[in-house]
Amino acid sequence: MAENNYVIFKKQYGNIKRPRVKELYINQNGVKIYEKDQSMIINIIVPVEDSTKTVQYFEEFNLGEDIQFNIADTGDFECIFRGISPVADKQSYSSFSITVQEKDPRQDQLQEKSDLIESKNIISQK
Image (spheres, one colour):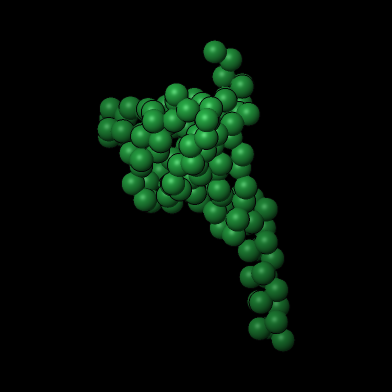
């Protein structure tokens, strides 16, 4: 299996001394990611025969739990799980969405926040 054709979702179990990871591979053609406000909506489409296993994987997450995903072997992206939508079953595929929130803000968001704080400081000094 060529990992660079998949989005790999990761759930960590256990403790620091004995961590375990449960992974789920989904073909990247079946994953679409949209940014909305402070969250990301990840639309997932899988063959109907894989839907039960896939949905069960995401139902194991608790709200606020850490989730990681790796797109085409580019490195882990750390997020917080925010929920799962109902599943829509079609003849040959099932689709649903999960909502996640970035665990650490991206660098461009940090820069925007820094610029805002700096502009407020300049205004308050006048």
